Image (cartoon, rainbow, N blue to C red):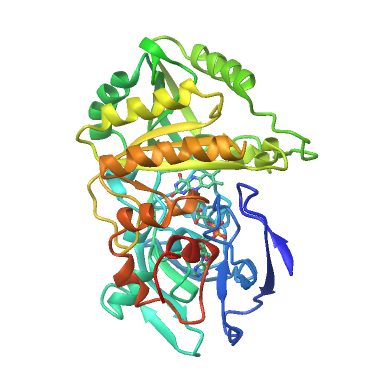
Length: 433
Ligand SMILES: Cc1cc2nc3c(=O)[nH]c(=O)nc-3n(C[C@H](O)[C@H](O)[C@H](O)COP(=O)(O)OP(=O)(O)OC[C@H]3O[C@@H](n4cnc5c(N)ncnc54)[C@H](O)[C@@H]3O)c2cc1C
């Protein structure tokens, strides 16, 4: 048994790891299997305590790329960073990308990830043309919207439970080069975010806001709003060597004082009104990828991310209550991101993204104190009729999950009988077998 960790460095669970070496090889016949991409999920959705993880990173071959129409077929263990490196010189970029390029194609499909262009492009699953799914009984399915369509919608956002995706074909998005142009705008409170968002989403492909979770009172919800569009120009930037945290500090470096200082500097660094910018795509989409293993700054106890989506109607009231609670505790959130999700329907039965405002916050793990805060945020999300994102979760209750994802029962019918995960057992544990 090996200790395999997800990005939040918790839970700490032992499991066996089987490294897959070819997409043609059969998968083990044992029970309790789960595909593992690059472990960029924060909690236990990619973990399988006492079971077997099928490590997919060696399935990293390109199969076919047509630069005329931007259709790419490749193996599922390939990283998004590798895809961009291969296709951008031909003028094609990812249709949807998260805040890190170090995730696999299989992980992007299984969590049906969303990005800063959700209001324009929907989720990743909307751009998947087909994939091959390997089930533990030896069957292979080629799934697409027209072939095995039910397995297709169950597997997109299906948390790795419907089988192993070995290859996938996706439609890329045409761009003029690696550059984006746009601007950042400071806003003084939560209402400022809503005002900017309603205007910016109409004319910009990418919009996102950083929020100062330490600000309270009149400044509650203040932050910086960023918007951008792809632009022409092929000049390259000097390749930046990523830095790496050399060791895990014995305690979390993220605390109320360090976060307050960072947030104040970050907020003040922006000019009061608006600053125009030109970004290389790596700088714009993946600023955190510059510091490899930045998750170690939270120390050995790890951290939680809480990401919810709140329906737009009444979102201001619910988000105010959440941010007020966070500002009033000593559980500082270093990274807090707000983004309006659009109305393009997600393909997956269990996809997280739905219309509303999504808020994502990181919290150092202080045990029961942190869990109580997160439970209180869940109470607000439940009351609002929202949902919490499984890719970021390590603690939501089964009652919460089943309210957030009413299609979970229908979904269970598509689970491969030999597949399971720590997450799935946790969120369905109250169900009598
Ligand atoms: C810094 C950072 C920023 C992020 N930003 C965003 C964001 O903006 N938007 C967003 O949506 N997410 C975001 N995420 C979350 C991340 O995109 C997802 O958790 C993603 O699924 C991780 O992919 P992975 O390859 O690391 O897969 P893992 O975390 O290893 O696994 C994720 C799930 O995919 C399944 N899986 C993996 N490979 C396969 C396969 N071949 N076949 C079937 N199932 C498979 C696993 O079983 C598991 O259920 C972010 C994460 C980090 C660390």
